[in-house]
Image (cartoon, rainbow over all chains, first blue to last red; front, top):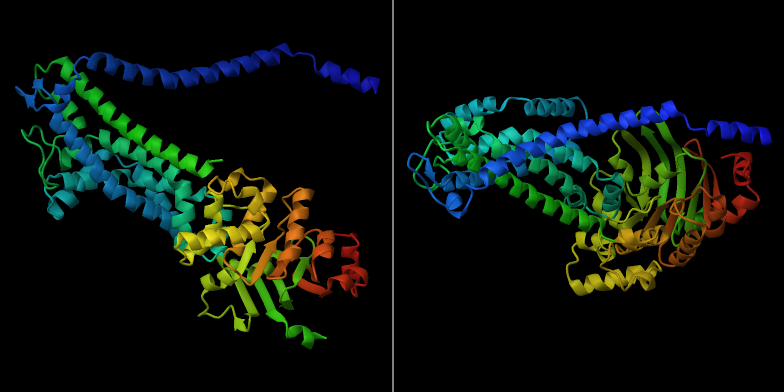
Length: 297
Length: 257
């Protein structure tokens, strides 16, 4: 008894080397974290500082004037909102529907594996290639012309893989015991999916969709080929109209117009960040609300 | 003896064989489930008792690669017929699972879930079904003031009684219970056992259990499963006092399993 206690006490003696190693690893991980967080904060901070003085009510609500060197960026904001809205309308039902099919209905086997690999690969295709695809299919072949419709569809294709994969994960993470309980109560398969599985999966689906939609709002190459206009002195009247859009506008004011005041560039960048931020916040609220509903005590 | 019993049978099983792919999980099962009785299915893990339970409401349909051969009839209707509506069958044969699995919804919505799916829309009717079912499951007094709170806030035993109430809300004729107390503490187990004894007045109950004591306490009839076969079945009293098969005796006296 005494002897074993001695051994125990000896083992409890502090090992200095081990403690240093622990500290070292902790330091390395902290460094990694900082390396991720600091640039993000720097970028946001830089743009806020340089752009905040430009952003005011008239900048947000007025048409550009004097070759875009003065006035506001209202049409670009409106254009981006339309595009994002169109992208959501096309991509969400399709993406979530495809994810439901893949997880709940499709027989798991070689075919579904192949589809999953295809979806993952689509996520890696450069966005300019999507632009070219949209130009060929929507603008020319289907005859939508350079329009909000063509742009939204192209952006929807771009973010479909993100929505499908994250929705699939979210649906898969709903425990089978819920499905069993629902089916055992005489609910049909679709009722089970609609009433039990999807409400549980919505927080996850929202997270993925926001990532996707945020990306769509900021993409330049696909809209450059399918919808974006250099400058239009009026707002788009229908989905077949061309539109200005924030990312493309930012590209133009930064590189295509000589003598453009700095403030307009950073102001535009800040507004673009803001628009993405608003979507992000909105989706986070929805996500939290559903999470609370499903976990309420 | 079997004739007198069969007249009271609600489920008859004849020559039932079930395969998971190439593996045969149930072999030549012949048995009857009697109305308003508690039938216990006992046996060691992997003996096929849960699989058998799940053939009775066709929950095995959900697993791919399962082949079922033989006859299972519920009130004279063959349930493996191609034109049988599984959804309708499951409304008549309810199920309670091993782990309490209330939906992450309110207590009210949990109980109302089944009736809503089968078309009950009227709020008054739903209120009545919810109250009756919760009373039947001996949970009403504990939850009547917080019907709109989440079911996940209930204790394990309460959750399981809620799952029973949820199944009862469909007014089933048969209630299948798959080790309903294995995740519960002794007190909660005791309450569920009392409840089962109450419920058999109105329902036919088939219960899979790991606990021989539980089978002895609450069941009228017992079937002993081993390696996918029913080794012995009959009156619970007889099974536990004078089993006719050596393997049954070994199992019920705790020599294996």
